[in-house]
Amino acid sequence: MLRRFWNRISSSPLWQRMRTGRTPYIITTAALLVSTLLVYFDPRSVLAFLLFIASTSLIYVMPLKRGFRIGAGLIVALILIPVIGLRNIFYLEVIFQISVFAALALGLNIVVGFTGLLNLGYVAFYAVGAYLWAFFGSQQIYLLHAIPGSAPPDSNFFLPPDTFYLFLFLGLVIAAVVGVLLGLPVLRVRGDYLAIVTLGFGEVIRVLANNLDKPLNLTNGPQGITPIQRPTLPQGVVDGWNAIFGPLVGRPIAQGEFYNLFFYLLALLMVILVIFVVVRLDDSRIGRAWIAIREDELAASAMGIPVVNYKLGAFAVAASFAGVMGVLFAA
Image 1 (cartoon, one colour):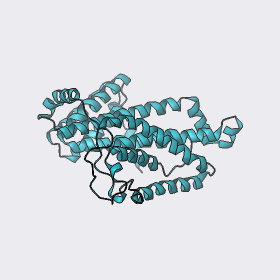
Image 2 (tube, rainbow, N blue to C red):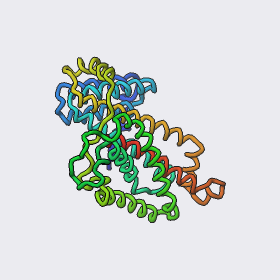
Image 3 (cartoon, rainbow, N blue to C red):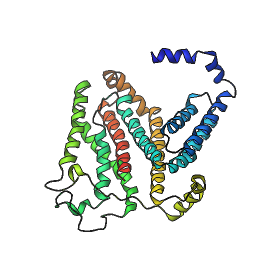
Image 4 (cartoon, rainbow, N blue to C red):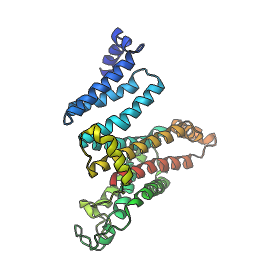
């Protein structure tokens, strides 16, 4: 029904006129401007925010030149979203979550879309990265022999906050290693059995996270690990952002809001990097081998493709994306 409705709209003369000449540029610019003003002057309006999100989609729906798309996308990502997000910090948090799950979806697409392996336990790699930074970036290491919920004996964190950037790389590497370790026994099965085994792996990680509070208190059980430190922001960056966004927002920006803006921009950078890697892999020899395995594993093997190695590679690459985003989410 929805497809029939869309076909009627797309074939109508009005829709065709809207997609010719300068009309797409005028509509896109006007929609972005109006929706941004609505959110700016009424930052609590969820309807205005949804209208803004819908207007940003016009950048990719309308037939626009590539340069205009890139320019409009940069303006939206680097100016409009931070401004309306600082007017209502909830919006930055929502867009941060969207960015995290977008990167996870792109990583899952490597296993499921490219290689054809139905991995239902993919979120476990996300948990690996999150708990990695949560453990070392908190005071949990002082509570290994303590009762869950106890106060740490030392008020200092185990590692300095700027090691967060190192743990982004460590999250990538360790999650990739876990992906390979999972793939070694799992790739002996196929189809629905593969999906069931990976689903079981995801459930095992969840149960471990909830119960590894004894005999050593590694995860603090269902209560979770808190507080988890954040990386320090250079004073020059804070002053620069205040000078740029302060007049646009109409007030001084609080320290906590700078962190929301920082994590939004960092998540956006991660998504861009993930998209770049995925596109490059899709056009590479590795990507074509993954697609060949998805279409016909037996034929791919007969053509000399090392099927097991490429499957393990797909697991590792996808898991590494999830591990990085897990570290980012934990902070």
